[in-house]
Figure 1 (cartoon, rainbow, N blue to C red):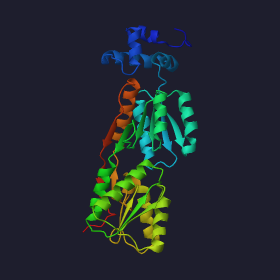
Figure 2 (tube, rainbow, N blue to C red):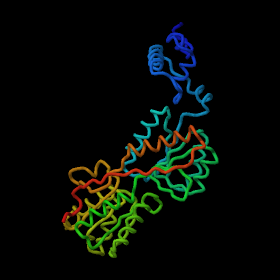
Figure 3 (cartoon, rainbow, N blue to C red):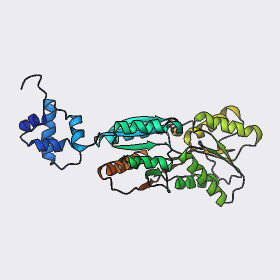
Figure 4 (cartoon, one colour):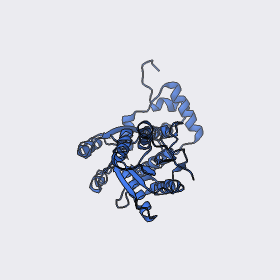
Length: 335
C-alpha cells in the first residue's frame, strides 16, 4: 500500500480477516455485530488510520448525524451542565450537536429555516417556548423534537420534565414548619413555560392550604432580578416571612440583597427557597434549600426518546417526568 493511499473499508476488512459488510456494521450504530468482531475491526481500523466517510454514511442511512439543540438566551444557569450532558450522550449515539440560540419569538422563523436547511435528524429544545402551531412544523418536516423540562399536556409533543409539582410541594412543606404568615413568590419571566408552571403550582398550593397573604413579583431568572425584586418590595412593604424563588440564581440574589442592604436575618426573620440545585446554591455562604434536578437522567431520557423517534417515525408522542431531590440547606427557618 502506498504511503498516501487513502485507507478504505475494504482494506480494513482484508487486514482484519472479515467481510466488508462486517466493517460497515461496526461503524453503523444499531446494527448487530459480535463483540469479538467489533474489537478486531476497531483495532485494525485504528492501526491503519481508517475513518469512515461521513458523507457516504449519510447517503446510505439517510441521516445527517446532526441534532439541533435550541437554547433560549435567558436559559437557566444549570444549562451549561445540561448542554455538556446532551453533547456527551449524543456523541455516544454517534450524533453531533448543532447549537442554536433563540433570543425572542421574532427569531423563530429564521431559526426554523436554518434547522430545515441543515437537515438535522432531530431537535432537542432547551427552555425554548413554542406554540402548538410551531410544534406542528416539526411534524410537517418529519423532524422529531423533544422538549426538555417542559410539560405540554395539551400538545402532541415529546417532553421530558422534572416533577415541578412534587418539588414545590416539598419546598412549601419545609417552609411551613416555621408557620410563616406571609409569602412572596418571585417568578421567572412570563414567557417562560417553566417559570409559569412553577409559579402557578406554588400559588395554587398556597391557596389550597388557606394562605391569604401571598404576593407575586416577576424577574427574569437572573441574580440581579432577584435582588431588584426584593429591594422593590421592601421599599413599601414589610419583609415577608418566606420567599419562594423560581430558581436558585434569584434565591442567591435575594440572600445577597438582604445581607448587604437590610437588617434582616436569614433564616430567622425570613426563609428563602430556590429550585434547580445549581452548584453555587451549595456554596458554604448560601446553602439554599432547593430541589436538585436529576440532570443526567433527564438528558438521558431526552436523548433516548429522540433516538427512538429518529429510528421509528411512527412512535407515538410521549411524556416522561422525573423526580428531583430535596436539598435541605440553611436558608429555611426550623421550628
